[in-house]
Length: 271
Ligand SMILES: [Mg+2]
Image (cartoon, rainbow, N blue to C red; front, side, top):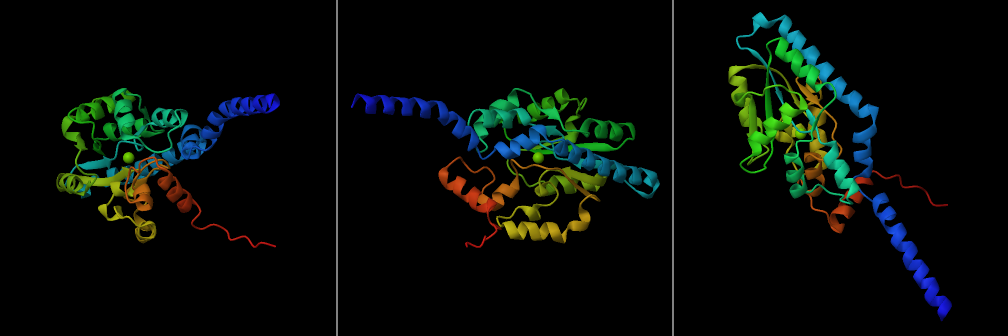
């Protein structure tokens, strides 16, 4: 009896020690966030995107006199110009495996964004060549959303961001209306984003295959007028899986994620 009690006590103590390790190992965000935090490939893809964007802008500058309107670039902000690695690191570190809007709002106020690799240099290139950058972001931190977005950009090194060049969409992620307004007055050379919805509302669909088919149909736009940056933690690609852009942490959603990840799984023959 005494030995059994001791054995149980030892087992409970071991589980208490091991459990946090198991939880950490089971965090669904860990792979994606580790890649964002460490992979040189992640940085290289940003450089590649901005290099391609710069080539397109240079080409437009070389024939500037052909255009009736001044040249401009429209860019998304989060995960395009600004990275939020410390938010995602915090989420993994605190055992969260799905985006949390309340935590995000608290984090945004801390002003801890970093510029994405190559973004500051690209913005400076545009500034030196009189090419306007319009920052179009879908965010909602209440009444302070605009001021926070501008402060985040300025702290990260984007210089003084003029009020009429920062557009904050609080109510909707549909960017097409504002894009069309900008295009009336400017020759927009490229659009930059980490979400296909940053280019066209057509991608706001809740079907994985439909979304991928659209990307395939629009293949000639990528690297030409639409420059896409990598984001494996958030965006409307999640909406296509879950039916909503910010699925809450739940076992049902963990199962949906697992099934999405294994959708083309090898059916290994059993001998
Ligand atoms: Mg974004």
